[in-house]
Length: 107
Length: 119
Image 1 (cartoon, chains in turn red, yellow):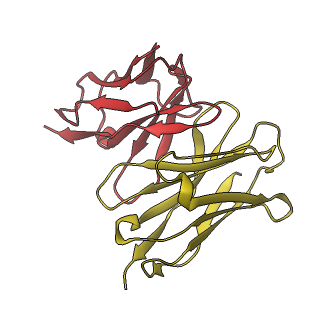
Image 2 (tube, helix red, strand yellow):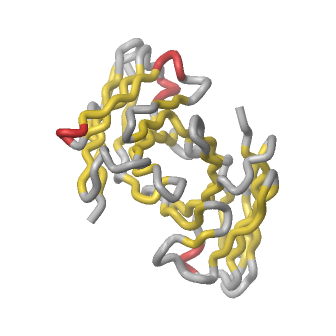
């Protein structure tokens, strides 16, 4: 099975900061990667697919990059609404795997 | 608009079988390359993908839980059903269904349903 490892597990940042979250796959997954944002008590929100495609309606301060085994989610200028937990997810024809999550906290 | 809603028991006993239903609207389960996934999240923990079913009835399961899971769909009722056998307290979690297909990833999610396993 493909394993997805996110780093860091927790990130403390201030409003306006540039934030980067990394997701590593245990083997090459091409660009088959999605990113989600989850707030407490809520279902995850779909942010990015195919590693770098921004879902409609998602603010442009969110961006994704990478291919193969290393991927990043970047928030160019952190806003109060962005404090949440972020998950990466690998997907292919026969499997999906989530990373363990990265919590973005207020510094 | 696209919506998904999970339904099922809130409490099950250890060793029992859990049956959850996801009722969808705003899209058809017969749309080409459209699918639905089930995902769960134990309290305070990470998301865990469980199973997926495509419009062509192709199914896939989490390797670690494959022996306990069955996913099926009734296109005429717009429903996807997940069964999980031999429930244990560690299976206590919020269970989500999500639309999963087309562009890749889960673009629409249900609100989730908390299932507690306890005697």
